[in-house]
Length: 233
Image (tube, rainbow, N blue to C red; front, side, top):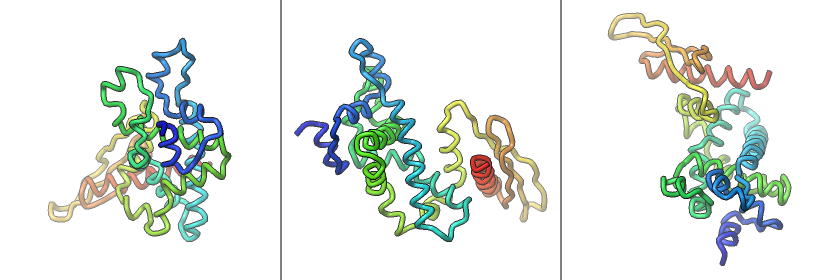
């Protein structure tokens, strides 16, 4: 059995055009080393797959959680499609051993790097979409990611708003998330802290708590709500 056939079995999908799957597994480091061979990286597929993943997950949550407000839907989607979640899918599919990496990236541990594996998952989703349509792509996402959502609310598994916000911001490596103490008041046994979440130095959300960590979580939650409102506007 070829490597492609093995992966197709794990995906429960057979490609009409196997070159799409091959491209989805082609990291930019491999493509750059083989320009003369016209190797194409998976970056464009990753871009498309990210949008498809977001749409399918959003529609799924919208239909499955009719009682959830918009902010909770947004946070749950972010938790489901974050790098950590996609990395877990890649490990289940054993994508690492199928990746095409440049020599340097391969020797540097690229097959186990969460960001590379997460990007490859998005690229594979796009490859399935281009080969078989939205129905097949949606079915893949549901099998790999959404099957257990009916049994447990994603937000209950991930109440760490700071982590969700960090993973959301890190989608753009140029952006920087920081927290600043705005206020601290009250006696030592009952202090209250006010923290602010900033992205690229710009305030995005504030929160209070009985510890700095608790206040940071509240600020991160407010920042996620602000980002959601901005995207909807």
